[in-house]
Amino acid sequence: MTLTSERAEYRVCPVTQFKVDLQSEALIKVNAVAAVVALTIGGIAAILIALTRWEAVGLLPPEWFYRLLTVHGTNMLIFWIVFFEMAGLYFGATILLDARLPKPAVGWLAFGLMVVGALFVEITALTGNSTVMFTAYEPLGSNEASPLFYLGLILFAVGALVAVGLFFATVVMARVEKTYEGSLPLVTYGLVVAAIIATYTLLSGAVALVPPFLRTIGIIEHVDPAFYRNFFWSFGHPAQQINLAAMVAIWYAMGVMTVGGSPVSEKLSRFAFILYVLFINLGSAHHLLVDPGLSFGFKTFNTSYGMYLAVLGSMIHAFSIPAMLEVAQRRRGFTNGLFEWLRKLPWREPGFAALAVSMFVFGWIGGVTGVTMGTEQIDMVAHNTLRVPGHFHAAVVGGTTLAFMGFTYYVIPLVFRKRVKFLKLATWQPYLFGLGISLVAVGMITAGIQGVPRRTADIDVVREVPGTVHLSLAVVGIGALIAFTALCMYLAVVLASVFTGPRVEATSLALVQPMEPVPAAAEGSHVAPKGTFVIVLVFLAFFAAFYLANWWMLGRTWFVS
Ligand code: HEM
Ligand SMILES: [Cu+2]
Image (cartoon, protein in one colour):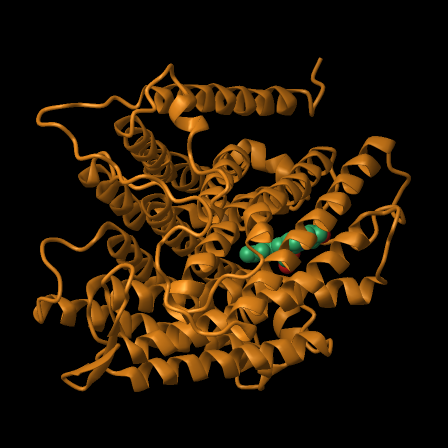
């Protein structure tokens, strides 16, 4: 059904009853498709570089390794994630608020800038004209990279900033036109947080990238490497927090969509998001922990004391989401023992599987290693080893990427209005992807602990390395083969459904395993999430053991007698 109201054309979603602005819907589609294209390019590069780091295979010569490492980093961390987030912003500002997009042309302008920017980077990276990796540190960056590489990144960032501006305008207009009642829905609130962080992140990115660009075209002669590093990471680190806020927003959405219920304390969840806005940018300092010129106090305050307040935010979500699921399940009558509710969750439902695996890999591997490495003393031995990519693959691949993948399965019927094909593949994909990327991460982390550097095509040329190092790198390679297979499964489901299926209207939210509606709470009744509490205690014990083990290992690095 298509209706018109005040310049905007919209349809009503038969499942959710949301009003869907058709212009916004089109922008969601093109941004999502661009994201998937970037994921494909980044994924092909991923398997090639992983098979190079697996010394026994040693696939690529160094020149191609670095070229594809640049292609991989930019496509995955920047293009895949940011295009997908743009789709998420349009979704959160219009569909979730029943609102119209005020100026669709601005959205198309933003998209155009981002596509042109991304193409510049793709072309210069693939042709070896910007083999500087996505960090492009000075002076390497402006010595080696073509001006088009910087211009591309700047256009992409400006485009994203324009889209973020449109997002804010849409949310404000929805408020003014009273398209929704009460306070912002939690998911949109999380996206507003992501967009606030995005604004200062993208501005820092511009401050970092303009001087090297000016140098490549001969306008200035010198870029201060410390200045560059500071501003680059004011962009690069908070960019991960946009991902974090967006991922958590999607976690809540997928939890509600696949299991039902509502956050146990919405106020607390909102407060946890606020902690991100206030403290997460301090984390940027963890990229500067080995840099000269900054005081110990600056590094320790920013990366430890201040940063832990942002970690607190994540801990609150990590409690609140499983608690929400547990309460919903207990209301349904799964009340036996501590964990009946857990066993009876919809494990075959792709969105739930993605949520569960994403939370596990993000928290237990990504979070724990990140907080540990962000400690100044421990970073002295972790810096620039494979431990670093080991940490962030758990966070940004096992966590964010998998959450985005899971969400896509619901975007296909609701936004593209296509039936999801190959549901069996969709059910298994999150588990396989989680397994593969966990092996990649654990292989990298253990290799890094043994001193293997990151960004190195071949370590055997330097000196003979012990067998345990080869084992770790083999685990990376095998994990990569598994993760790559799962990535292809995702692409098969998405591309086949979107491009070859006939148009159908969705009839229910669940794809595979629908759950009974959650019975309304009886007056004054209170359900305690006891199982979640136990899981959280086990997590904290694991975290403490890992943290202390790292100090113990550090104590064994220098033998003082
Ligand atoms: C199939 C999945 C993936 C595999 C097998 C994989 C594998 C790898 C490998 C082997 C490296 C090189 C590490 C080194 O030698 O230093 C790497 C680097 C990297 N990966 Fe992935 N990756 C995957 C997915 C992703 C995704 C989804 C993202 C982001 C969302 C990502 C972000 C990065 C970044 C930022 C780097 C560092 C690039 C640099 O050092 O400049 N990866 N990955
Ligand atoms: Cu960081």
